[in-house]
Length: 523
Image (cartoon, rainbow, N blue to C red):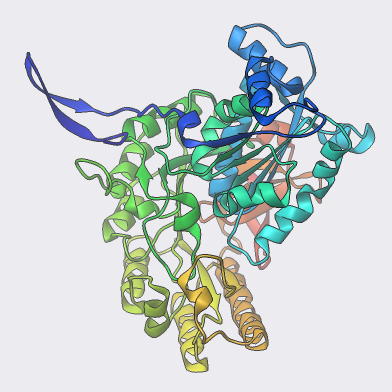
């Protein structure tokens, strides 16, 4: 059984339908722990004596003091700081927010940029939330951790955590490469970092990469924005695309109960949030792992109807599973933004089959046709890989013609790079880097052309914009987004306008942004 399942249970009073709200998981039973054998810890005693000594000692280090204080319900006086560096996708951003919530519940605060730059203060705890999608991801992790490992070797009390997809992928090998690391944890443990750090404070190095049900988080994420928030609805991915490492690093699909999602969004609205983005690696698969099965389109309609919510977005859709009902739900739900992110990855059926995508060019265009029918002004963004093993020039041209047919608003492009533990990485028909880079340059030129064309239609329109932040390049301007996801800049006071829905007349259209004039405040 999993959270969200409805099961039939028998008792001496009869039969009962019971909904599983959460599944309690003892992470200490799933994590691998080993006692640190640093000579500076307790020199000159046997391993068994060391383990016994560690078991008897108080929590180690200043972080251990914070954990002990939190467990005893007392205020910890030391000023502990953390720093989180986040790489990769929106899922990682959401995971980092949850880890921050856990750390702050322990009394550890974020290190301010000013403290780091001007006062040269260093964090007591560093978390690197990693991404393994791009090439050389592992090397980037080792390079980034170098200065923190050096601090530890020199005797400083710093706790080093590697989280995310590289952590899941590499596991114990990270400890062998960088022995100074205290905790290696996969994405499925993002909301259990406090429990894992307790094991670290006992003097252990901890690796938590085993598959696990993801429990609901009792702490509140530390949101990076006060206007728009990420909300996970499904974790993991059951697909087996031949180029992708995500199923290996993020595990199998696990949908959250609709009641938990509704409760989280309702609470966000009560805190003043205006926009919510529902997150899933394969969001259209939401509910297919539940008993009974649920539909993502139904969840969209339900969440979109929550009183006070102004805007609702979602990512990422998979053409294999995206139903036309999802398009209809967006068209019929006033709060749903006219913005679809649907990665085709290629426009060639032969390449799509080699990728193991499970859909065709024709299926993709059928979805696009429905969007153009039900929401003609909607923006469609995508991800495309060029230079996949065996891709011919003719097949690459099919991707370009797909782009011409759809006219994407934005395409995230990448040249294929082999990822560890993926089938395509071992194929012998790899393309030369020169061919891949040539195709990447050509597709990027077309991408820029279409992005400019799509935004040009906004000229002289009055559009609704949700104001999010100040324009960092021009402080007298504010930045917001249209329902299509287009960035808009205009003159205004951020303290007055942050979180407001406003009307803006578009005066100028750039490739990836719009500039306009404030017409009026809507709320």
